[in-house]
Image (cartoon, rainbow, N blue to C red; front, side):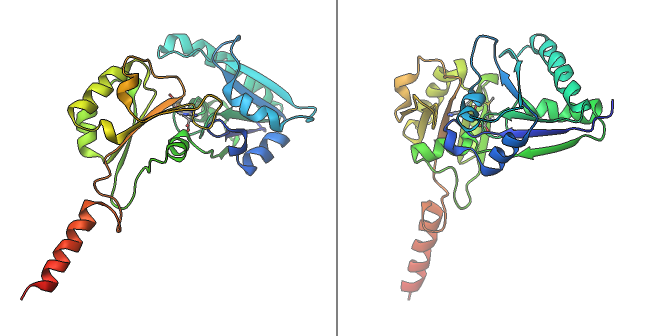
Length: 263
Ligand SMILES: C[S@@+](CC[C@H](N)C(=O)[O-])C[C@H]1O[C@@H](n2cnc3c(N)ncnc32)[C@H](O)[C@@H]1O
């Protein structure tokens, strides 16, 4: 059915309420409906806990909680989406603006992506706006001081819970590897890093910028743990860093000075 409303996907940042953007706040305050994903009826929404302190005193706005079970099984998730489409669609068809909030950025491993894909089919002609957010992929480097990439370096982002069998090949092909959604793969990851002599090049950060933030610089300490659902590991080899850093620059400088001193 044609919809006259507006769908807005809003990234609310990695956790700290002051890492939400001014544009996100503007859209959140003026939206008719805030659609709030959560993993169960009994657990709080992390995205809403970031937004809530900014929304005191705003009246006449609906807060629409939508429950999506944390599961990799499409059969468990599909019914939840059917309910969400009906709930969101009925508001859009009344011409309302619906702001769907997501942790970090809405276009990186986010529930919003499925809604974005389905929207043109379900609600042709719908206006859609996307407000980018500060992603955990940049929050984790910020709190750990581990630079993501510089100069010629290349980055891979891997959802580790879906398997890390190709981690060695990824470490060979990229200078920096970001492991999101580590879950049960921690031990395999640490074993691989030990084998490749890369333990010293890794950092594990849990709940970056949130309460309970933890930074582990010796990842062997947590090898027996399951990765927290807000945790990431970054492995940065730093062998091709920028003009003033790294071995490539160093080799060029050595070559240049050798040529200068050659008879
Ligand atoms: C479903 S993805 C959501 C990513 C999000 N859209 C973003 O842009 O950051 C969830 C994964 O993001 C990472 N993550 C999200 N927030 C985090 C935080 N505050 N600290 C560390 N990792 C985080 C973890 O790897 C987690 O498994």
